[in-house]
Length: 221
Image (cartoon, rainbow, N blue to C red):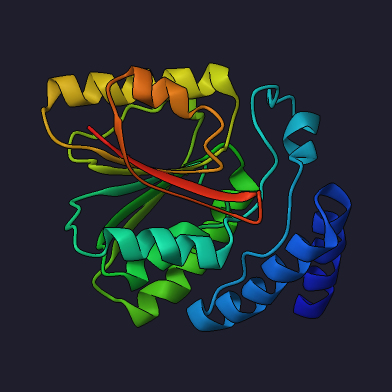
């Protein structure tokens, strides 16, 4: 079953990008899924949400962040002690599971899809067996209306939605930071709307781009 998922995902990547990046990502999928002991491979264009009448106009398809890119950014963050890590657009929980392996304890994820949230709970349950001290929460909600918790100091985004929703998220982060002053780190993969953060006063402290598509930015304010 897992082999079929890899094959399907390979052809999806090859048809939407190119064969070189498809091979690169699939190789990392196989290594990463085994290393972290979870099942999070595959793309979801969210048609099930649309059929249920849920507005997905501003959402992008679900695709997990490549494991090698995740490890690059978490290596950059490894000397920082975050109180509360939040993945906005958390999908099947891959990022949260990797975060747990890097020593983060308080972890939350938010996603619009109920089905993806259920998959995330299954993956986090597996991860908790290896890291019993983690405290995780999966929230099925629209990011535009999500109130950023007062202790959230690291926020992860993998281009989960368009500029309309992202502008709302940036505003929500700003409101939370104003109410509860603190330094907030934003990890933004495929950062198409990075300018929204820089305009809000965030400073980029790390950037990497590989194979023209695998791009990550770490910003801080």
